[in-house]
Amino acid sequence: VIALMILNILSGFEPGEDPLSADRLHIEIEAARLAYSVRDAVLADPSQSAVPLDWLLSEELAAQLRGQIDLKQAIKELPSFAPTEVEHADTVYISVVDGDGMAVSFINSVFHPFGAALVAPKSGVLLQNRGQGFVLKAGHPNAIAPRKRPLHTIIPGMMLRDGKVCLSFGVMGGHYQAMGHAHLVSKLLDYGLDLQSAISLPRVFPRPGQTAIEAEKTLPAAVRAELERRGFVFTAPGAAIGGGQAIAIDPVTGVLSAGSDHRKDGCALGW
Image (tube, rainbow, N blue to C red; front, top):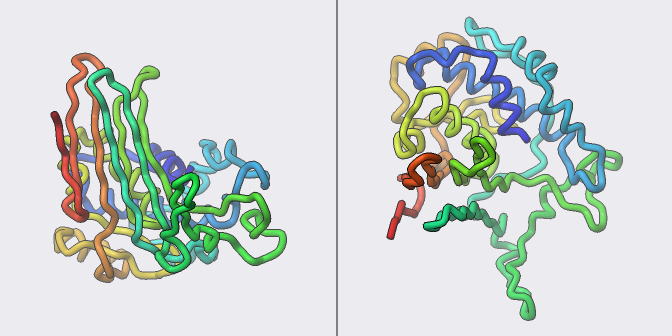
């Protein structure tokens, strides 16, 4: 839902010609910061808590958040919501499409190895410790409780056109996943990039709970300098920002094309 919120916010701006322009990155950074600021306040297991999905995906909220973006300067104060999920890097993603067009988008994570990475002997199910994503504050929508799923970042992606799958994709990377999905989809739809180019493009990420924006060193220096002039503070990422894999299906010819991120182990393979 946060990836869709980011895309809703972006939809109100003209994309421009350059996906790495200062204006476009300014908008993407602020859209992500605003969407993530909402996330931890309201998202929880919908079977246990009243999650306002219609409101989260409404044009009304998108317009409200969009109105806070000023291309002259960075937003100085955001709603303060501490992230409920600590950072992790133990996620894998696989996308498969067969000759009949059957698509599988699969993502899995043990969260952190400590207390996880155990296999149930009868079912063969790999256990994990995603319970760390709960909140201990009583009354919070994501408060820990029996038979309840915690807030988590796992997002296997699939995009449809006219009711048919046209893209099976996923972007690993902990908190980055929602922004990564929005970033990839925007580059494909708004800029017409091919899959590999969209995946390989330099990335930035306003990591929740931090004031500085993580930026890869391949970000153009002039763009970074302009964003710094507008008030953004950048820092080098502690690890690769995400890792994506994707397969596109041409709805007319059925031809498959794929892309694989150089930031992670993986490859695009056909047979």
